[in-house]
Amino acid sequence: MRTQVAIVGGGPSGLLLAQLLHLQGISSVVLERKTKDYVLGRIRAGVLEVGLVDQLRAAGVGERLDADGITHDGTVISYGDEQIRIDFAAHTDQTVTVYGQTEVTRDLYAAREEMGGAFVFEVENVEIKDADTDQPYVTYQKDGTGHRIDCDYVAGCDGFHGVSRQSIPTDKRKEFEKVYPFGWLGILSETPPVHEELIYASSDAGFALCSMRNANLSRYYIQCAMDDDVRNWSDDAFWDALRRRIPAEHAEMLVTGPSIEKSIAPLRSFVCEPMQWGRLFLCGDAAHIVPPTGAKGLNTAASDVHYLSQALIAHYKDGDNSGIEGYSQKALARVWKAERFSWWMTSLLHRFPDQSEFDIKMQQADVAFLRDNANAQAVLAQNYVGLPY
Ligand code: APR
Ligand code: PHB
Image (cartoon, rainbow, N blue to C red):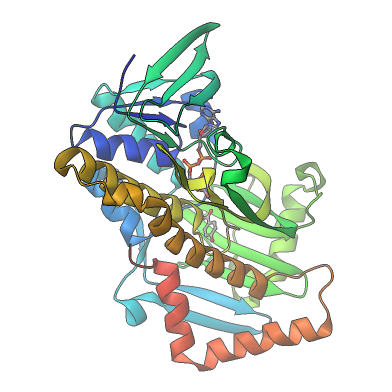
């Protein structure tokens, strides 16, 4: 088989890229290791920057997002007894949209199916070959049979555990990593959200986040030990811990109910440089990971897809290769800013096992500065709604 762009990975990065290319008449094949149901069963974050919302509309998948997405023009940062509302609209003239990543992925699948785009699920042993030549190709197995796709370019959209990054020789890439000494225990429950905006809360007992999917679906997280196990957490134990970590006025209003999903995610910052090698380009989690504080994971994947789709479109439409040559540099410039912001919010709001009294004073001073300084609030707002592409 031959295609213009072979896309490894059918998560949000791969699907969005395929759709944006398709609309410009550029062919692609998406190879996904799992089944569609498996991919749609993963619960991920749910805050979309304006840049991603615009891209989804441009990709023709804005309808349900526009109908069901909830516009948020601010968020609450709570630290001990302190509550600071960050007004995105006032500081940036922009808002974010709360709409689950699972729904984004569902909409992208539906669009790809509607246009009859090539998609292969449950592929095994994907290998990217000759990416440093003008004739790259991808091989894989499906139901025990070997296949080969010849292509012009390969997009590595296969997440943190994928093969794409590993296909770049180790002496041609450098990895930067920070692992945090805790995880997030998250639950989804069919209960009304405790507040109309998200609450990022830091308390002596650790961090908590109150988020939502819609008027009757809430998403809550609490900081937990990195080696903790969901089986240690009954729903009641979770709700008790959450109540102790959020401001009292909200704790009193909290409506609890049975969890319909419960999982623990580790927290990690990770970047691979460069994000391209010959004709292979990395996008999204394949190239970088952020801790979820600040909701930058999906949004940073989306900015990669923006730069890469623009670069490929300029190549095919105008013979302009500058975007392709500069992809890694351009993407990384924005990636590192999202890394900084996520690291900062994580450092500000979590309890670290080895935290000294001095470290806590530093957090408190940072929070006091944020409370008293409109410029500091504007910086947070600018980063949260998303830096320009
Ligand atoms: N071959 C084919 N597909 C693969 C392979 C492989 N060897 N390895 C992984 N995959 C698939 C995974 O099954 C998954 O569906 O690639 C997809 C990657 O999807 P994600 O991990 O969701 O990564 P990405 O599409 O970059 O999404 C952006 O940002 O912070 C996050 O939560 C956020 O998942 C979101 C991500
Ligand atoms: C979520 O709703 O799942 C969510 C929201 C904001 C974050 C992280 C996760 O920072």
